[in-house]
Length: 366
Picture 1 (cartoon, rainbow, N blue to C red):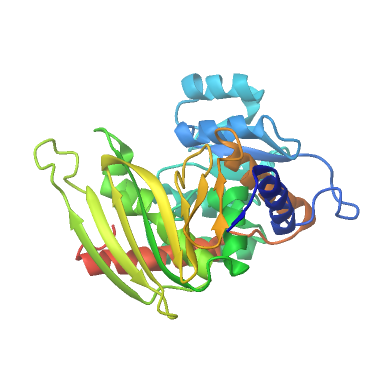
Picture 2: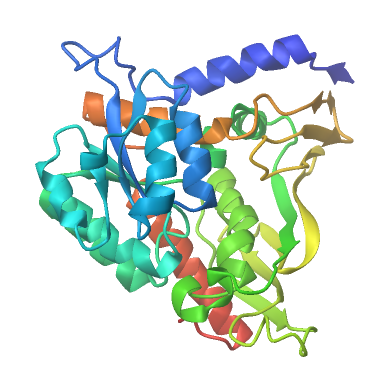
């Protein structure tokens, strides 16, 4: 067996990450060197992480805020992000961002059902869009978002942060190099115990339950690592908590399988009823890789399970660093006029699969 040292792994990760990026500001001839200004739309927990990540970036900067609470959250975020009062907008005044030249792009961290509307409105205002996953609550909405951004000649990227994490990129490189042989199967899961009174438990706002929020992670990574689109689906939803009322509208737990054209099978689980640390196992005919934790904001831990490689590499960043990587990737795309690695079409493919899983479960999406 051969062992990949931490130092060698970090070096490999850096080279893989560098190769995956679009040309940098410095590499692009005559590129505008200013940081790209983002307006954070919706000031919830995830936007808090995104804005803090941008505060340490040289290429992505928060220059605007959009909130339904300008006198509370708006002031708090504005003070922390050094955003002037004139660049704090409400949902009613959102369209005025078209007149703010300091805002070149928006980051949409709203409930899922609002992604479509605010992506289209941002595009119509001439702003590029970095939208959180899931992209929308239906494939039809995804298509509208893609069309709107193309018509407005603005870029659309979906915030699949794991695609920018150097540990996930190294797992991809190991698989492509044949280190574990031919992929045969995936196993994965993710979940947490969702407290009451959250928008994610409202079907109209979320589009679904645990599947659209956390089940999407292992499914999306399996699609990414295989380069294939699933063609066959099974699903079993269940709700054990029938007394608290939390799951009156969405599933509590859902197990599902997907099968790819090559014959690779993925078996996954997701839950809003239990703390389920995210993990992904990739099984090949010469060995297996495990990412655990796989989907945390602090990054992934990669290990091998048997085979010819011995790998034990902890996460390579601090909490929220993936948000910085994806923001900088999108900023580079804006400055160099290149396409993002995770465009709207990637989000659309996930929604097509999510709809098929819910159909298999007998519970169509909202």
